[in-house]
Image (cartoon, rainbow, N blue to C red; front, side, top):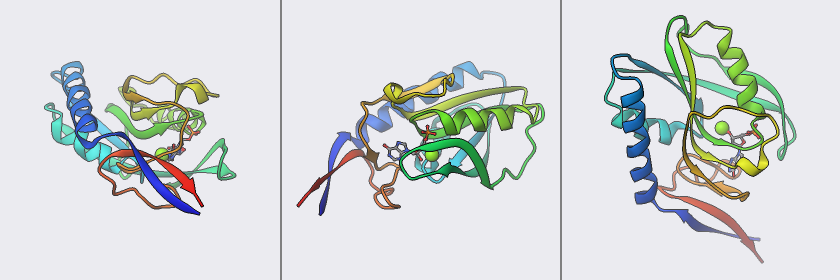
Length: 175
Ligand code: IMP
Ligand code: MG
């Protein structure tokens, strides 16, 4: 089976949109600082590009979660593989995610983080597949809504491959 990646969103389109979202975040958090939480590994590229363009003071922390369940369906019960280094009390927390699919992972994560008493808790995602939603989550900042296709690049993987592609593409299979 051969794999090919068809470009869905070019590097320029993605970077331009991140710039817009960063402006919006900078305006919304004016006079405050924002504590970005990167959900590893997929959100790494997005978080770096976003953080560079935010003009209010930024702090960052990283978290890695794994969903119990099979490969294609997340169960919604999340195991923390790597927890945050810092407490969240009193911070304006912005979760930075690569993609929201069923929403199960994020609803669980939001629930866990809310219990750590942040001053505010918002969610920012690079991609959203709203058609696939099972657990409702409030997304405060979305760069792109995309159709129900499996995408890679800009941090997103297929079997750990393609994370380093500078664009977002759809994996296509042929013989
Ligand atoms: P959810 O709990 O179904 O919302 O799972 C979201 C997680 O599934 C994301 O953080 C990704 O790790 C993974 N995921 C969902 N759709 C895709 C995709 O199209 N490409 C790569 N990973 C995906
Ligand atoms: Mg993810």
